[in-house]
Length: 162
Image 1 (cartoon, rainbow, N blue to C red):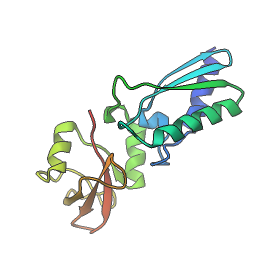
Image 2: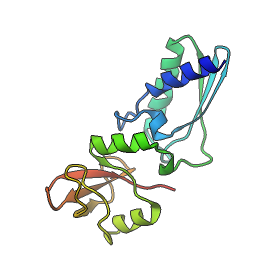
Image 3: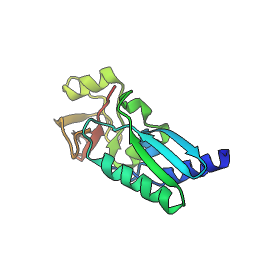
């Protein structure tokens, strides 16, 4: 049975977050549990943010991927416990940075950065912390927009959520 669970998990690893395609949903930490009983699979997922528009697409992609592999798949949305940025894997954080999105800071540092009280958010282009908040909202609600004062490049920051 372990071989089947591992196969299912490897298939789920191929599902990317539609808003950040370099991240698998496993690296993002939205997959909470996978239950396999012969060919029946139940995948439990938690949204990153309340009302996250990507969750419908993620559910559809999981179901499609596993159904194509011969499984009978059910995807269930789990709201508690609420997702936190702590669930992003270390690999996921590295992928975010390489993609040009600064990984979330610790909660207190995040708050200071988003209030413009501190320069802790590192530029994903040059690595400088000489950065400034441009907007508390970036391309999606889970991101803020920063600009580096050294290389002058704008970049997204994935907000901390606990």
